[in-house]
Length: 171
Image (cartoon, rainbow, N blue to C red):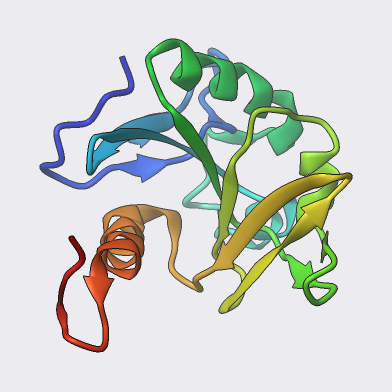
C-alpha cells in the first residue's frame, strides 16, 4: 500500500527503475497522505532533462524510463488505494497561457494520462491554474525537489487552511 504515516523522508521516483524493472531503491513510486480528511495520492516522476543531467556515477544500476510509461499505472494504483485527489510531482517544465491554459513539457505527459487533479513541478516557481484540453488543472511549480514533498504539502495545507489576514486557522 502506498499510504504513508508521515514520519521519515520518502524520495519519489516511479520511473527510476532497477535492473529487474522494479522501482529502484531507495525510491518509492507514490505515497498517499491524508490532509484534513482527504487522501491525496502523490506520484513522483523524473523528467527526461533531469535524468540526462544526473551524475552518471549516481545513476549506476538505474534506468529512467519516460514518465508516460509508468504514470497511468501509478495513477490507477493510488486511486485503488483510496486517493481522492491525485497529484503528479514531476521534474518537468510548465508555462502559463494566462488563465486560458497550461503549456510546456508537462503537456506531453498530460496528453497520455487521465485522472490527474493537479501537478507540482520542480522546474521553476509559479502557479498556473487554467485548462488543458478542456479540463481545469492547477500546476504549481515549486523549485523544490521530489525529496521534499512534505514541505510542499505543508505549504499547500497552510494556503488552504490559514486566514492570512487574521493569521488564524479557517473555520
